[in-house]
Image (tube, rainbow, N blue to C red; front, side):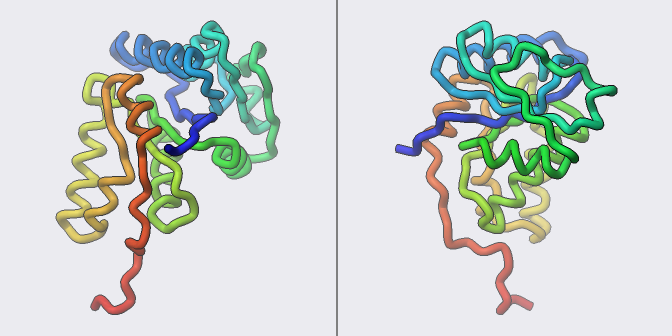
Length: 196
């Protein structure tokens, strides 16, 4: 079975409209900490990012934060992390987080979270990595995004196999099990040069 020791989590730096978002960020953090996973994330102490990191730490887990120096003024850096890695840019931040991670989870979040999620999905689609990717679909938050992926398949901009790149569950424990059990399909190239 796939050995997953560290998980990169993308999450909002706000709490969002519903208290369930924060509740489930904490639940995910507790699951990660209790099961010995290292959390890799953006290094902030605000919003869902902060709740997640605090919950992992309170559960005895390790937390690695990665943050560009330029964001230190705008975001509150978590000062109790196991390790904080300072980088020069957002591009370097995402590359470092990916390098450290065996899998990815997206909590609810805004444009930054969407961008990070779609980047690792794109990387998986073109074969840069074969790590598992999941969304914690709290309150159906990711339903519209999952429908968009389905629509892109219907309109023949994406292959049907792309839906298999995203694991989705509303429960942290179930989602972690899905990621652990993930088996890359392989062999389905993004581009078919024989197609018109």
